[in-house]
Amino acid sequence: VRTTPLSLSSPTSSSASGCARIRVPVRSLGWAKLNCRTGPLQNTEITAGLICFFLAAAHVWTLEHRKYISEVERNYPKLQGEIKQYVFGDVAGHPSMFVVVRIRNLGADSIVEDYSVTALLDHRTFSGMVMKLPRYINLDTRQLFTSADSLYNKTGEVPIQRGSQKTGVLWARFDSVKQSDLERCTFLIRYSDINGKVYTVNSKDFPYAGHEFKTFPGLTSAN
Image (cartoon, rainbow, N blue to C red; front, side, top):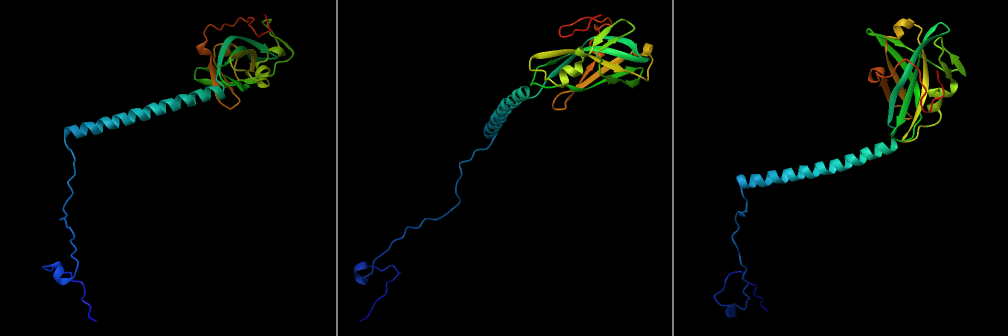
């Protein structure tokens, strides 16, 4: 028995050789032709795309920033202090200042604490000692103060609620300055909220606050 292998050559006749003819189409390969555009028109399209991208990113950032601000206003205190009146007097030989302060809260509920009073005069600084108001205290100017009006007590234990305010008296004693000099000073009153954020009130911002003591809503002391 003789077996004839398939021939890969191209015979003149398929019937003569008994072999199947296989035709494989072959294409010549070359470089692909890309449909690219260059020039001013393409640059304009790229620039417009970038502008749209940045505008969209800025819009998203603005929305997120507004959400963040809204969350801060809901969850964090926002205190505003105001000096209503102040009066000076001598208490047992110590120059003293009694100041009426009103604190509003436009944010989350918060206590107010860590009060301090600093006097400024001719580039000199004097730190006052915030004292606890006794049950009653009379000055040589016949001013009467009571412990019920202590700002520290009013705000240090019970939080100031959102949209409400507290008015009270701070007593600051100064041992390193004369009474006559104390009355010429500018004063900085500092306090902090529940989160430890420090606020500052400057007496320069309240020039209408005179030395004559008066009665205010939320305050029982009177002259």
